[in-house]
Length: 104
Image (cartoon, rainbow, N blue to C red; front, side, top):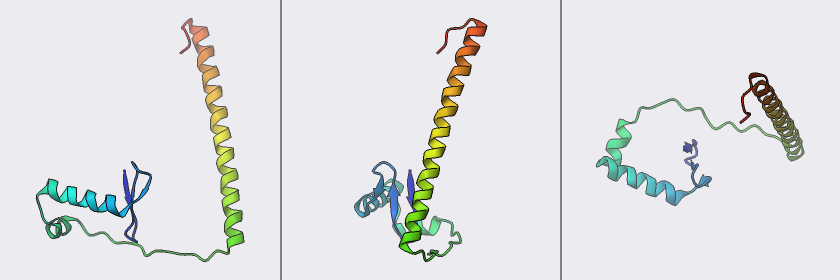
């Protein structure tokens, strides 16, 4: 998976970060595979509107508070997911008993 942003950074899922050398080598490989010049390939890409980089000022103490709240929410969601998975396993086991099938 590849992700990019307006600043020119490209993030590579297989290495879990951005890397200029990997981006360059990936581009060179694509050029070689296509047998075309960079100019020709760039001209073939549709142009899409881009939103500007939006930066909202946020004091550091408020940013830390927001991150703490998000981490608490994530922990709650993860706890709920685990609860639902345990419930699903119990329901599946009970249905297997009722229908006389071995539980997986």
